[in-house]
Image 1 (tube, helix red, strand yellow):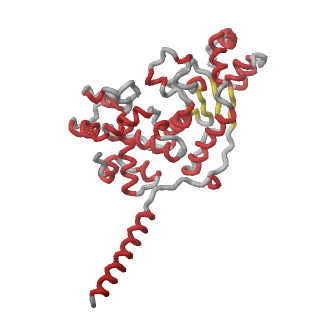
Image 2 (cartoon, one colour):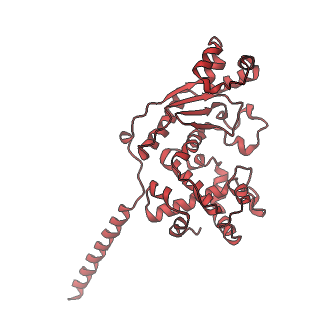
Image 3 (cartoon, rainbow, N blue to C red):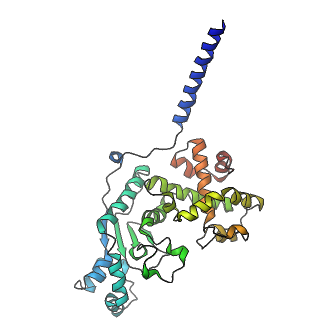
Length: 326
């Protein structure tokens, strides 16, 4: 074979190899965002309970108790509810909640449900959403109650709202309507995530990473910072210090530790993560969740695993095949 023949042969084999590589890559890509026409139809009823309770005082209390028995503990006397309905502070809070339009709320909830149903068609989701005032109880912003989804509407007024004065800054930053989808997905996440039997710190981080990946699929149009409920500054800090955070976990042999204190330091909400080093300065809380999410992203990028495959993959395989090393 002459030189021209060898050159042609080389390029022919090169093209064939490119085709094979492209085929393999295309064959193992992650699930793409479905088209709007592919999403299932969802019938969801949204009830603004706070509007009935505080806004329409002509509605008899007994009627509300009959219609919503699950919102009225039997041991609470009626006089408590009557006083609460006309309480001046509650009325101010009620007026503030009306800045969140019913139709917008319903549309955003339905959108999350449609994506969840697309990926988990056999899962029976709540068919009724009830919004209510909870005296700004930010520990229960969305609650999955089987066929009901309860939303504490007074915890979505915006981080600079004057009614939130006195609440710690790191909590106020999450009390935004931008985080509605995140709270709904977090409330429902137990339906889709396998239970964690592994008690190691790494397993806990990856469990949280899987939860955050649900957001990518159930709320694909929501910004990443809103999914984890970080500020732009907090996200930027995490990106800038990613390699230092990982090295800190590795060097201190935290990954396979079962020390429960690590959960408090790096996974639980707080004003900052507790490295007890210079990294504490400006660090956001829950940095272990963010690292778990990054490992999950790296694993999916390298393997092309689907959402279902990621959720069911164990800790060791996730770490090994992700080759995570920022």
